[in-house]
Image (cartoon, rainbow over all chains, first blue to last red; front, side, top):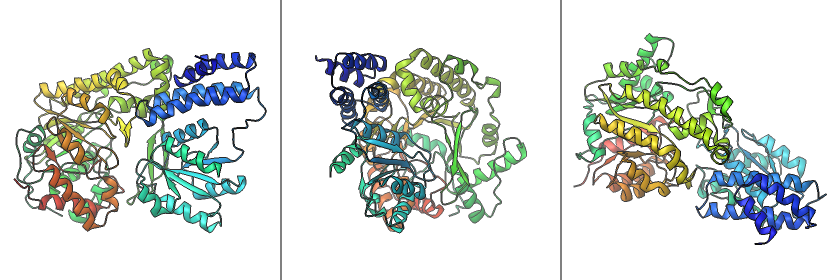
Length: 211
Length: 362
């Protein structure tokens, strides 16, 4: 097993301390930081994401893996000025107004991060104005809306409408998800895409971001 | 909807679930009907003034329950759930309630949790046995019309206590890998408190079952692994199943989420009936077809559909469930989760009317 495979396995199994040690070792041995990032850290996170999608891993395993990934990335950050794999633009995620649930949204954030994408988390109970202001400020192209309740997913429509009113609807791709949300409801609201789990959402955004 | 002679029969309801008897007409039950819905029904259909629950005022507590009992009775229910014999303190999130009949603000447990280490475990104000408050249970017991019974609950289920209230989802995830000793202590502490409270409640005459909620999954799968549940959660459900059965009462489990990965565990636990279904996950029709030989099935009308389908489509949808589930027994109709305050009252009443008009085909 190569050194990078060992690192990937350590991330996948959530061994935070060992991940930090291994990243330091690899840096000291002169490994390219982008290789450590892509073939070690992100590969491990991607593996657990695939297992989760296949029903062979559960959210706690994803969380400890993400924690290990973050600790490894924090250390690696000290050795790199820019990360070529990381897109400059941000991907805005938030749970909509009236809803404080954040686990699903956080998972989307982790999965996006595992794809090497920069995530800007607007938090929970986010109203349309906050999404619009963030998009304006950063000239962003993607917004992900989350809701856990039948009552709060209704707000998706309002957000889409407000983006239209603000003249930003053509600029921004709106994705949505959450327990009560469906493909049908997503279309009814005027969202562009719906995905039923965090990894599927991240995979879609990663594809769209290439365009 | 106002039934002059509701003729409740909670024993028949329990026998249907346990498979001892069948019924020629559809029986229904609910885990929870939110107070806002009961209040609207109470004032609109019963012409009674709604009284809010007041923990500190016994007289008003009694009046609250008088209304609740009358609502359930006149709607044709044979029993109702009484809960909160004890309460646990936990941090809450509050935001605007956007429901149809808004309660102003809506509260959620703060997922950050309150117990993070041995020190916070020791310092937590654990409820003591002398704080178990059974007044509501005895009041309802003494005031129920003939034929009605109590579905008893103490508080949240063991997993919910960890995941939602005391530890929090993320912290629990880390704790399950980083500090199993602490997790074991918390589980044992909570489990023992719940069991002690249930030991008292189960003896109450009109308590016909334990109806415990413990959400273990989300629409597409489990929140934690089967092995986690086997180690920390199922042993306590097993204790409760055994306790109920020792008193010749049933154990009903309300658990949201797609629990297919723990299907065999549910069977092995010996629970008498399962509640909570949504079409996106393990739908009631599929669950019934796979599981009704092992346990009763309760409800299943997807709450989203209940809220949003036009009447004719809602009727068609409910009839499909009844056609699939009612004929072979061990099925009691109702919502897939609860009648939350965002469910339009008239949709809820339509759902009950559909059930009452349905003739079970032999």
